[in-house]
Image 1 (cartoon, rainbow, N blue to C red):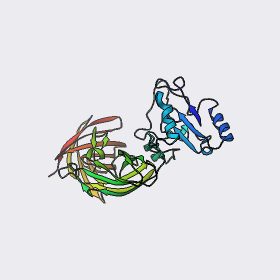
Image 2 (image 1 turned 45 degrees about the horizontal axis):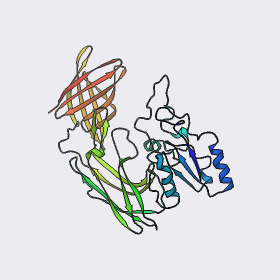
Image 3 (image 1 turned 90 degrees about the vertical axis):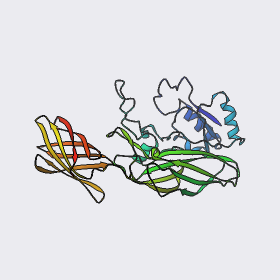
Image 4 (image 1 turned 180 degrees about the vertical axis):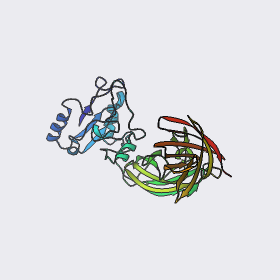
Length: 363
């Protein structure tokens, strides 16, 4: 056994490590021990991922101990000698190299300023978005036994914003050792008005299962679990449509799939129709008529500005929010409007100007 890693002098919450590499000489130490005895287990004590790729394929096992405190030695011994079954799962996505990290290229920034350029695509979301294969996926972890997933049930095919949906499945221990499995529930928003992650973790359950035993694992999802923050509305939004349920042993080990549909709210405001508006401009109020239609499920908008007809581009209609662009007078203008019953209010901007927009639905 070789124990490697960092200490409080080399790693801390108060400062950052310059790289993922192990301290000097530790990679060479591992390789030398492995050359002498191929049955070498490497124990890593560190608070964040370190580079493993220089020797990972040469060793039969790696135990990531993190910082276990004064009793870490006893815990490591129990795990290595079989007194306890390792049942932990990674709380991070483990990159093969620093360049694969979603924060790479943005951190540490310049002049004490950091651009959070990855946006919502941190961790496994960023690896999914960029199609990068991690060394170990978020939620990954081995055990001395094996678990079989099956019997996925989704309590209802369709729900409204006031409903909940129950997700259940069966986990069976197919090995000879008792163990604990962490079942992870991810949800994919099939089609959204904003850029969304490939999937998002919405729940997890740790279940202890004896050899040959099967246990039921259940989750409950509601509107909040299906919502995302829309900066245009400055609010959380759950858009109607299809959602996929993905049950996995890690973010990259999806065992079961199902789905359901979130139905539109019966009283949800709709922007479809014709709107008579007034746009406040530096030259005074200007009449604007918006005609919003749906063609093959997609919004189509015609705009009449001061009596002249224009075709909008990049139209997006999400519940009661409409955004679009229109070319007018040699410039491109962006419009964002919100519907409240038969009233529409919003803003426009372009060519260095901006203003308000408001009006009502044409009877």
